[in-house]
Length: 393
Image (tube, rainbow, N blue to C red; front, side, top):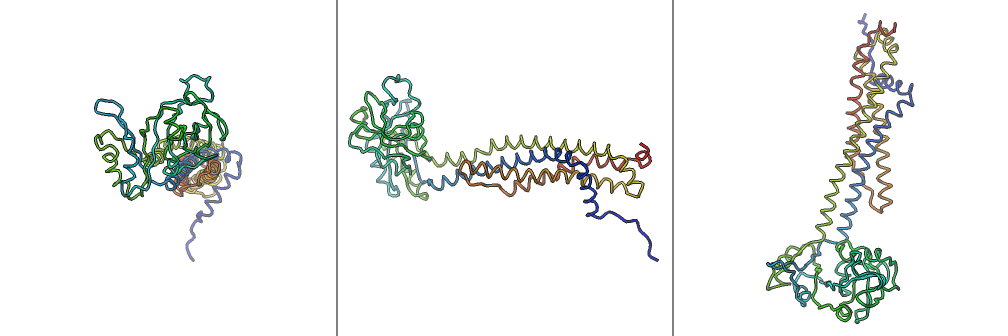
């Protein structure tokens, strides 16, 4: 005859035993899993929203291109503000790889809705002289209307931020600049690579000369070339624009600011992830507390199982599996909620919805580790319960 051996609990049996404890107290299980779900949902949503925003910035950058350089006048060795030559735009256009160039010039004028508003109340809006080719170089598009015909007429186009601050939503109204009325012929969409234009009112070059005392010298030059030629063009721009004092010329690449903004979003993401981790930790403490109470309430059940032959290891496995199942239910619910929150926010903002797979995997891994840690002490405590004491308690 073959030797008889005591029957053990297989993995499926252990899983069913652990799940039975959750089914016996569903409300408590749901409330305990809720803390885990909130923590995981927060972490997944934070990572997803941050990734979606970064993807939107990079898509905008690809659409706008990285071949735009900005040239502006710096300061002389004596600290005085330098000036760019009047013919500097034409000199930039002579550089071989340059596709096009345009400029804006500061007029020093202020803009207001009426002449009754004090000149000091500028709203942070600049009045710049410009030519129509500026829109093409910047890739800017009008939301309403057109750029004013540069025939010396008192007309303007408003940047998006300037229009908002002035309370102008469409062409056909007038604004007060200097000592006269100017007609609004158009409103620009936001210009991704030149936010300073969003905060400006654009006046035709000749009109600025005639009505605002503009001297015709550009303040900022925008140059566009192919992405491959940017470094070569940048190397010769300063000497081309101001051959006498190239050290007084400042050159920047606006696309670098957008890229830096995309990378800098990680700082806020780290802070919010910390808050999510705190919520997850609180959820883990809740699971541990639930399991400890469960062990105290089920002492008779533990004693009966021990009396029927259950080993200490089987008791430990039962409560550890119960803790893991409780945490996993919360983790899975949190991952789904976080992904849905990301998709909803991205749809509201018009962004591409991006939920990195690693964030879901990391969330579930954190759930497993937390469930194990939260269930370890209650499981050990349950295994130490004496059958005799438990049944007589």
